[in-house]
Length: 323
Image 1 (cartoon, rainbow, N blue to C red):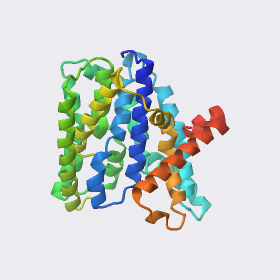
Image 2: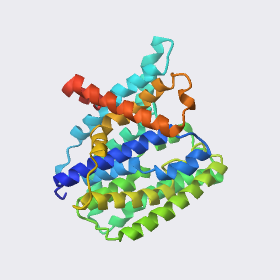
Image 3: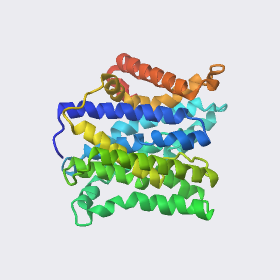
Image 4: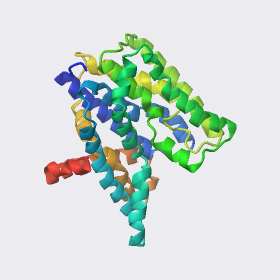
């Protein structure tokens, strides 16, 4: 893995800050056609997080236990918090619900990421072998193939996967593999992308248009979430954005936005806590009727404050909550 300079490290936090803003916006967007029209502009955060994780990985320094423990402990605690917030009237139902959600990773919309991250962390030695082999480019086929076979074809054919398969699909890393793999190859200097910035921007514009069209088609086909991040067009959009982000990060001439860096420094905690903040905010009369951009800003600011204050009050113990 190549050495990351202090300037690049700060910009990585800027990119995490941008990504956590996109996460909060996504979860405040209304459903239906609003998802189709707006999500293509924000469907990059998970891909960016995984790209950065892959870029900072090295099989020679592989210590999965430390990485996994760092995210697994907050996952367990926040799963319990969200179960308690779900309003179980009978306490004897809580242990069963907690264990079920803990295993399935479905208490709230972000929890699948923990499984995806842990799976990719455990796969680093295999990722490294593939990335250094003559078949290295086959790694970029994994995600499109998974999306095509497991998600797109069932939609076209009107076939619904059984509940067990759907649970596995929700927490599988295969649909996200491209981002991590791309990051690993670039971070370990196994791949260089020299496309001009103008080409990347044209690629991005075309991919966004394609994503809107594909999202509308999903919507017309009756898919519950036309804005989902696991679509073929999202892979194209996300890859273009990530390559532009990498160009920004690796350039010595680009500025570092301190506001975004601060958000990036607190992004781990915001990731876990912002949906809890949203649940509380929705208890306020008429809050649900506020325009979604305002709701997203309020959620982001309060989530940041929660993490920042929690970090100061709890000190090192705050890491248990990802603060």
